[in-house]
Image (tube, rainbow, N blue to C red; front, side, top):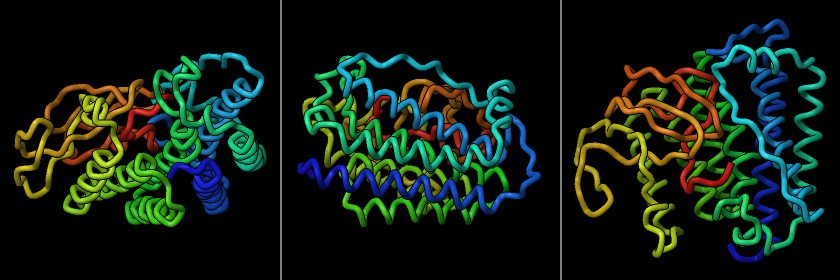
Length: 306
């Protein structure tokens, strides 16, 4: 997808999907629902998503004003103060701000030039990553990951898988580029793995790998295969690894910023939106922090800038 108008239209669809699913969750959750730092309630989940989107709005505004955006502190989703800060938002504010900030993000996307969206060299703070993909991370991948994680933590694995599958189907319908489609595919793998559907999860990870290989620059193979945690193949069959080696695991890509522990290796790995995840090492096939917190930042594929 090279036409800027088509790209913006597709991203707008992804942003709208995430915002609508947030409203669906808020409408369905009990008004007296309780939560805690290890199992977030719906209101703080959406409040956090909204704040994360608002930071991207700030970045797009800074570009329009020819200014450098502010740096934002990393978020520890297991921190009690962080959780209770979001939980203190009134329900009416959470619902209204979700839609309002999403609208501002869509407006900011529409006002951003094609060169700014696609050329990371124009802004050093992008750290070599494309702005359009960062918008997808902040406005689609991150919030839908948290929503699916909420359903998983609330013992609704089928709902989590259905949401991730719907997001992937919508991404295909919108014709988003492979990098963004790979994110949706990977979120589906995460939900399927946590729901115990390991064969389906392994297939989704393979699709993610294929999408990434199809769009990764040949001159940057290291970006295709970042150091990472691993998803264990349910069949324990040999799966291809970088450099033509074979192993019993599929590579699981990661994002800089937060921490998880690989079930397969026991090693801690960085990923996500700056969240520190505490993941059980007893869950085979776990993805990111799905086992511990509502859905903080399951791994993305092309390591988009936070």
